[in-house]
Length: 339
Image 1 (cartoon, rainbow, N blue to C red):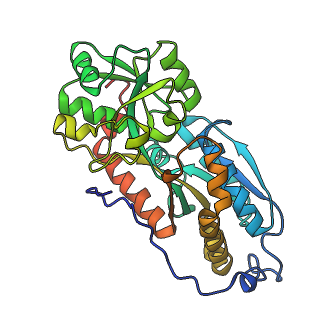
Image 2 (cartoon, one colour):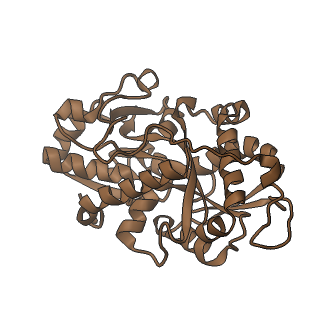
């Protein structure tokens, strides 16, 4: 994928020279030598339980847990578009390498830029292992009168359409606002606090259409139809989405590539104090991503495996900083209640 902000579609694979055996006995926080990890990993997910983030993380730890010889436990903190979970992770979780965050970098960097919370990226935490890339789309119920993206825009020129989104600070929201700006159509963005309630709002007619990442919608293809994709060059799931068109191609617009990317994060303070252990954490997460155990577990969720994409700390940071810059372009629109 190409885009003006150079968000990564290629992994940045850094060389990691030390062996896992040597790293596993490195000192933790300058204390006496001990095995790492020394206990189970505690994970903060800054959204509700039962969503795409949980399914992806649990599939991933099927492989990662075996490599690290530990288990993962999860705590869910929805609210304030992810801010509650991040603040809890940064301020209250021990910075000991056994506490991780599994976040959706796109929407959560948008939240960070627009809400200006009391923590700092990358001073307080770093993303170090990107797991997937998921294009933003516009979709509708199979029973909806809107069968094409052209019909959606034509209708939205006559009256504002209610668009269900999982949360207001999200790449999908930027896509709808940019589409409205480019075509002089109008959209009311209605955040529902997660993928499942967003789907329900569309099925019961509360919202006219939806805007979400693609893979979750594809798992419910019998209920929903993808109408358009926010990608400049390619619909990566054309065969699974009835060859849904690229929105830029339909309207001759120049909306940026808009996609979500979930990633693991850890406290920066721990990384700085324990570079060898951090190398182990990053190295083993890459091995887990390449494992057939992870792919098999992910496919059991019903999501297409070609969404899986690994990126290291450099790739994650590049994506996060690119999202911050993109958000600044649309900050005033993202803070508005109506499109």
